[in-house]
Length: 167
Image (cartoon, rainbow, N blue to C red):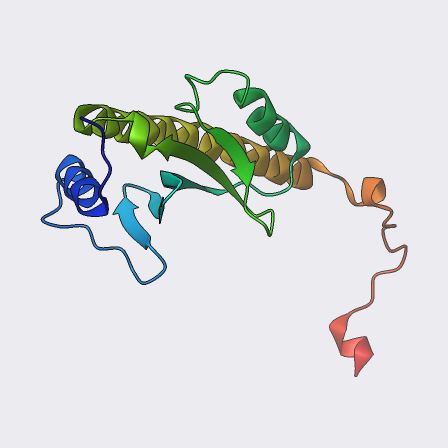
């Protein structure tokens, strides 16, 4: 049996997430707080398609090119992204995991399984990206501490002025 009704889908998702119920707003959107982030669910229920889009917020990643390259490379393995794609939000601040599920092709057990796979992938990517961001911060802090003023274009004063001379 395929999932072809929004109410059935909501019930399956709520049970899989351990919630009493899962309500979508007037735009067919719901947000669930997860450990360390949020999972957005967007239901598209039209005559020609019944789709559920899952968007996991993986956290802020900054502008480091190595981290952004990791997102692109991560898309090479569909297993690592639960069949979805890694992306940046429109402002380029946060990494996202986006998974599109065709509800007509899934039964209730398969829907729950795909939800679990998405959450597992989101948790792995959140941890990996957070470690990378932390590493970049530590490298930058270390570089700032070890830099000598002359390396930053500063020159040391040749004359010391006592504070009493400034008055």
